[in-house]
Image (cartoon, rainbow, N blue to C red):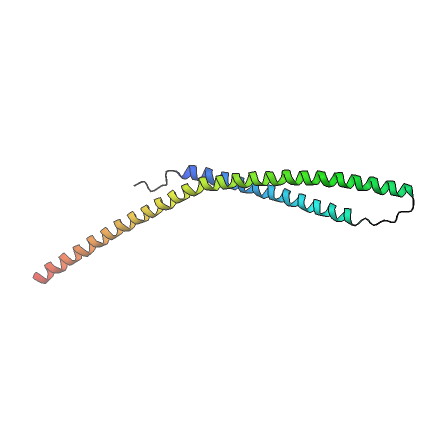
Length: 144
């Protein structure tokens, strides 16, 4: 039996791909979280505007500001949806990369177990041979 796992190179490649997918997922989660935070802050700002209206000019300014804020909020919502979609895609990519790695990791574990079993079998054979040799020598000494 070959002591080295023959698919070790492929396993390393799969683990690198898994690490890259994990970092991509982390970046996507960060962007999505950032978008949710920005949207929540914009909603708080929009709800907190209780400025006194002193005339028609200030009413028009407030209306323009609210309109602009609503437009910004809609843009943030769209960006949030895009970020969530990217996060879902990154999650799918990570799951696929992890799935590809798991199969090879299980093969590696099985190979390691077989190598260990073979080593133990060889060691036990050597111990049995030593014990048998000693027993035969002791038997011959008792007879002589």
